[in-house]
Length: 374
Image (cartoon, rainbow, N blue to C red):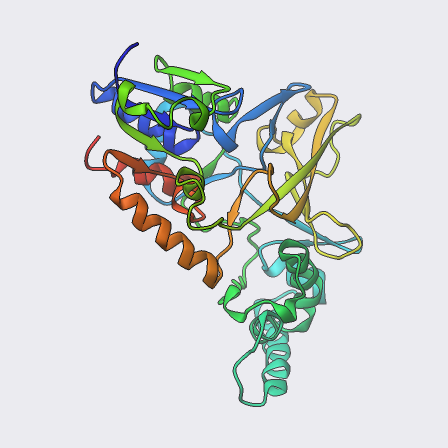
């Protein structure tokens, strides 16, 4: 059996970037993944000539030039700009809230008119509170943007996402709702954003080029008890509670599920992301994957399209864990697990699942690039 410097469990962005850096530093790595393919949740499946984001839409964005230059050194990124559209009962609104949204909502055409309308509605909500602090998400949102925006673009969408009424959700979830008094539909404020040209598999393949990998491997069945025999150190990117056999109890997750289908049209909704903000539809949004990589008239060069309806659900056994649940019980339990993790010799816990923290893609890569010892 070969001896490795690192056994890396999971080939998502943390594991793959770590393997890339370690290999460049002259270390030998073995990367294993329980799925049959590499890439973790950024893995794309090619359907009808379209890269389908199998585990949810992934849009790369960062203001960190080091991270942007690094990923572009592996594969060039395109010019995709995330500009979601919201559909509320058949009417369309641009997101994030900007002058286009306010024109669609109230027919106002100047920033001054839009600001006056928002301030008027905020004042009504603040008056209702009569001096007390907002007690729940609904009251908080109303004081930030007023009733029209709240009722059409926030309330029901948030309820679908969390599976709870806005009056039963804590106020702190929405500390601020960005309001832009300019005609700018770009969702992110970051300096750089895009999608790898040719899809995310190109990024993963580039990071793992020449590195030994094994797919369809269950770490717990095959390596958990004897990994020290084949590697000096372990990089673990699975769920932290599972690593410790759930001995302190199980952490909760929110998850999303997808219904993906092929549509016999080249252009189904004209945008990569359309949010459905009313309870009329059970899904939170529809992703049309080709718009991540095909722009303008190029959309019509591929005769079919692939769309995914996205549903937000409570996590159950055998589902994909996506989002940590940041309530008191889970945060406390995660902290206990992190203490156990800190006591493990020669084990690095990396990524969303192993740290029980929600991360975008760029911060994960930044974390690995900034690791002192590899």
